[in-house]
Amino acid sequence: MEFFSADERAFSDAFLKRGYAIIPLANKARLDAVRGKIHALALAHLGLKGKKAPSLAEFFDHTERYVGVEGLNGLRLAVINGLNADPDLMPGFFGMARKFIEWTVGNEIAMQRGINLSIQLPGDDSSLLPLHSDVWDGNSPYEIVLWLPLVSCFKTKSMYVLPRRESRKAYAEFKKDKGFNAEKLFQRVKPGLTWLEVPYGKAVLFSHSLLHGNRVNEEKTTRWTFNIRLKGLLTPYGVKELGESFLPATVRPATRIGFEYDAAEKA
Ligand SMILES: [Fe+2]
Image (cartoon, rainbow, N blue to C red):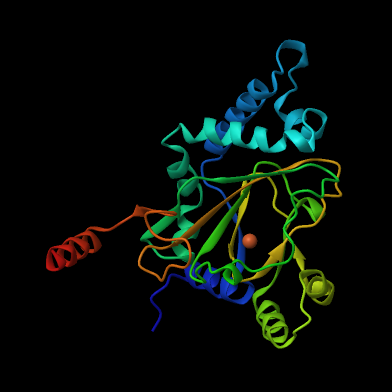
């Protein structure tokens, strides 16, 4: 018996095999608007006005010309604070990837509160994520991550993943190895890594149980990416719990009735 449409089946099979999918975003105008807002927030934070104000393309590509590594965190926080003032921000991101999120996770979704923004300047080794799986830190294996770049990402400007089958094999091997460290594991799995090529307007959905990470951005332009955790509302939680870390995004009426019924039973 087949309950999925042919498109869903093909997507699902491919995701199970690889553990990730590169997806086209719906509503590019919304993405452009977010990027425009970030440009304005960043320029205001950095005091770049008039003739000193770089164009949007120049600023995103060459952020390193306008801020040093020491100023990155302040810039990041200023942008996040400015964006978070907009209650449509999270629904907007959700809407851009909704079909594929639902195909991957289900249609009752819990979404991470607040966004993570990462900025990686060319040659900057201060904000690297060594090879890891988020599940090692106690995050739920039922979660996925929406990794959404604001610039086109390729080669070392992107992130890498070890596809699912290889990730599982490497994990099984590593569990037996007492002398493990991330760099040693990286060298071992390096030939099998996939550097995700994600043009602006696309995003990645990936299971954070995969081995993944990034290296020094050796390309000439800066990387700007958001990452947002998502999971099935009723699937098991890890260290990040519903309420504190996750926001119930889409809750269907039958589930709401069930929650209310259970709460009344307990009262
Ligand atoms: Fe991660």
